[in-house]
Length: 305
Figure (tube, rainbow, N blue to C red):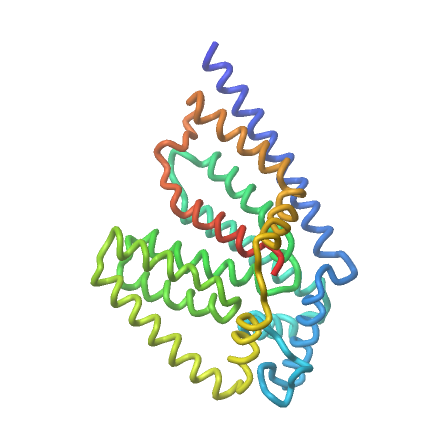
């Protein structure tokens, strides 16, 4: 009888996941093909990519304030490369974001893969997908690409036991994340903290020194060719952004009002599985460090900014 109940519950769980997935995919397509701007920076993305294709570089004094932009250049140059083989419009740039979202899901699954938790991990991936449909991630902005670099910067060393090659790749993707959207460099801090506390203080020191060296030299190099880069990307955040507790509450309310029902239902399934231990997909043997790190940073990445 108990075996029968477990089997029926697993079928119900799978059907529920498929329903959520179909709803999320439909919502995603609505976002991609929506004819107008969904956020004012989408228009800025079109303008910057258009000017790059004409040979005009952002982050230079002569192009200010016409091409003023607070995010890094990686997303815009990659977008310009892809637009050469397509047309420049919001749909094209949103498809680039969709490609990054799909890559995020594959990376998320690969880095957290466990032999005894496939279905539960797929459920986490679907929940992760729902997070990436919120606010800025799926539209014509650097967020989805920055999130991909962030995941790679922490996933590769965790997957490869922090060997030298994986740490070098982590540094590379942390730099790319930094030059896509600044605060995705937090991936570097996650790895550094873990190295220092649980792996090797000496390796953490070398990792830190190498990253500081790379980011300092690259900033000097970038500021030489883009003389307004530092002022445009860093000073605007330091001097033009004001946060307070009421703003935080508004962000939390904005975040939860659309996703609370879907997240609550999925978490109820997870809780039911683990409290009653009715499935082999239990969380008790899983390493949740990456999942917790991702979701906490996704929350930070998706609130209005």
